[in-house]
Image 1 (cartoon, rainbow, N blue to C red):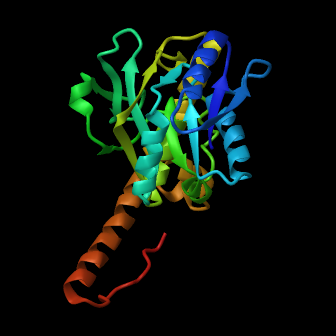
Image 2 (tube, rainbow, N blue to C red; image 1 turned 180 degrees about the horizontal axis):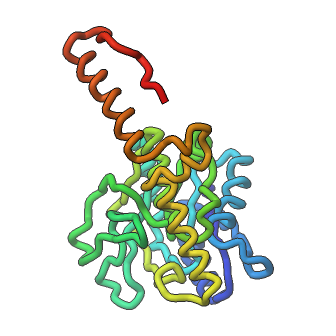
Length: 266
């Protein structure tokens, strides 16, 4: 039975609707509801709490699901069948249909991730096949537990935004692929990540975006953590990279070592 990790915060009617759709799945699902109402841990830590439970079990897959995602009856089965047939696929996700416009796909694949995410969208007939993609939304993703053991938990430095795309990039960097399964579908209400919220949550979102940038885009996180960090100016990084690019080119041509140092001095 596949565990389904559902962060729950207010709006109980959405949770109950989500659970009713899980009860109708053709592949059995066991809800793992993470209650954020007493202390709001936000999305990422709630998911990680559920994943810790999954890792202590014998589950093969784990479903991460928003409380406002309402899956069609065969969605989990189609996602599971896809991962069963694709051993290096670590993450699979369904199409997200609009609850306001059922004949419109709001999310068919993640393209630009920074700063707020850009999604492919359009009519359902445009997205019928299975596709390998850059990233998928944490509103619904089926994770292979072997991949979780390899990758680890979601990065809790991004408390609300970005940890889903970050996790997909991390999976891909470790050799796992990420896919959208066109035959798996669910209706998704627009969540808090896509609308303006109170000032405290908006601050969390901005901090998440800046952390994502420091981790993936600017090199600032490495400079902060590394011994040689202060010396790694943009010019110095270009100099060292150019050194090794020239070495690589020489090795490719000669098939052996070229003259010169094997380590660029820092």
